[in-house]
Length: 319
Image (cartoon, rainbow, N blue to C red; front, side, top):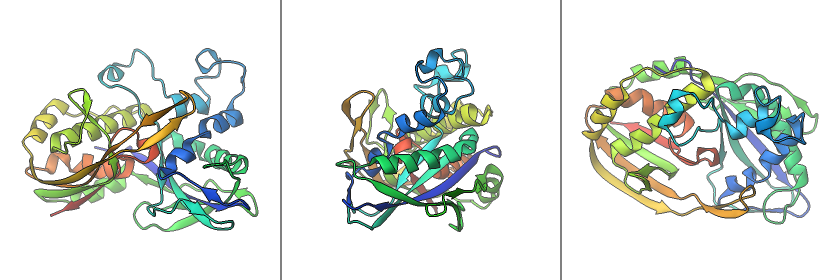
């Protein structure tokens, strides 16, 4: 079902400069701040024009990565609120926010589908962003290295060395074919889904802290359909209405979740924005076979809104 899915995973390691570094608790928000502007300065050939009226908009990396506006006639677009961006920023799991001069910290970048070919732009963008400063006080940091990570084994390959300034675009891509092999190995009627980062989704028009299986499934299904269609050129053929009906009868055995409020500052809108969601775990029981491919794929590409900031990361444990 997801044979055409392609995901690449990278680890960026930065070093705090002479003034040290202070990041907010929501670290990926600081990494995302200013990222788009620097990216655009690197790739834009008509900086005086707005993207919408630019003659290069259909071949430029910037509108594809950051604006992702599909053809208005695309039938699939009318079903959803928006199109997911083809990248994800994942912060490290420790709670440290202050770094002394010379200390390092890392984060992960995931690219999907057509976005993988733009990997060098991401490296040079973060290299320049590091020089201009990030975090509270906009202190300067240094990009030490970028590694390509194997999705399952966590083996790493150095793709960028901050000392030599050499960049390799070695493909370290996890494909849906490998996922298909994993799908065949799952035969279970019970699963625990761990919501590793805030899961932000709507139910009946409002953001919800309910982790009913059908609510979770609707969220990840919409995201996967859009990722495949807009970033892989694949129209996923399945009876989604029937899948939703089946999801509604999957039993929620246990829900142990709590809502976490996060906040980020939007430079474009010049305002603070709430991006909270629920974390924890939930146990589900029932006929899960139709949902195995969706759940395993969502472990790779996240499953909720605001995934570019690392939200919606899930981990499944099958019983």
